[in-house]
Image (cartoon, rainbow, N blue to C red; front, side):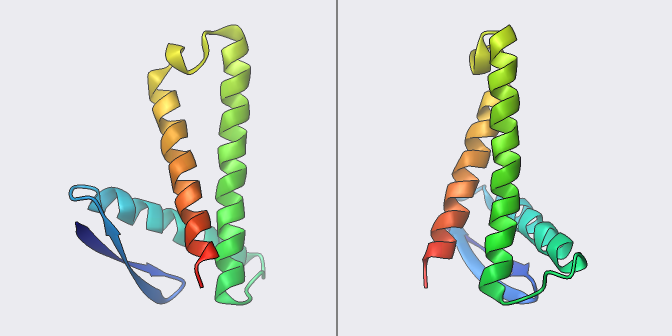
Length: 107
């Protein structure tokens, strides 16, 4: 199992992942950092847990929008089976949202 060190909002987190997934995990950490930067730019800086919660909610909102787009596209097509790449992306986003939620639930 590989480990990746992520820097999010000035804090360092070491996270384990499957071998070969280090770059992907780093990219996901960068996405979280980007959301936190957006929140702070709006003047929403508060505690670390709140920033992470708001970042997770922003990502969940994006996931919801993608699911809605997929459902609308499915009305005109055969759904994810007609666009396997979109289906795989949606599955990855859902998995990442769940992982973030689990992380926030931990003390």
